[in-house]
Length: 251
Image (tube, rainbow, N blue to C red; front, side):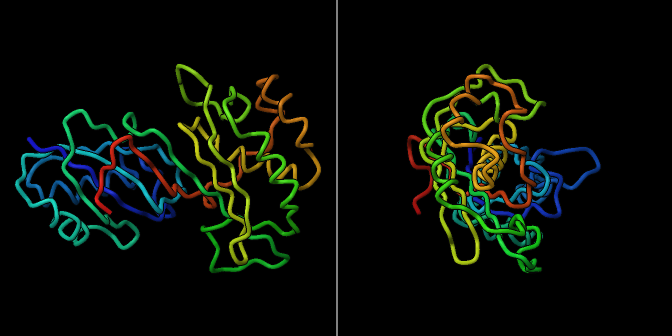
């Protein structure tokens, strides 16, 4: 038996998230069908995160096991020939049996994109959150600084997940202009359900003056979801990085 890790990217617009669901198109379900065809056996994949419907990934890692002897360097070309145009595998590598796309990861990065403008742009539809106004980047950065570090992020998660602890460490939360877009990059050792989107919503509220950055520590202390900003729509969110203690891919 061989153990394989894949690096891939996908547009989540046409899928009901990563996790396989009966009778609904998902990224993992689509990938599993393609892999099963080329491996000649039923394949089950484990992904590095359960992205929601409409969420995208520029960098994503999944792993599976197989008895197929298909050379690992040929695997991306083979599986891509059976995948739709909105999912692409870029790299594959053999890994140890104990490698796990989720539990072996030491940190992840999500980027939330905002398009601030009075007029919408159809080319950013389903790729960035249309915000019909001006953004106060300095207020956003001040709020983001307060959300960096190790905290109990209970106030920044949505109901629907069971975890042992709601404490997470955010290594950085950068807010910067990238051309016409505002990019909110959040890197942490793990994310709670909708944590990145609610952190982005809190930064928006700080930009609007609805939440004062210096009051964010009080939001952590109260641990009440209602005190933080809104959960922004999924289509502006991209997984943009995942790191492992031992590098998995050569490039």
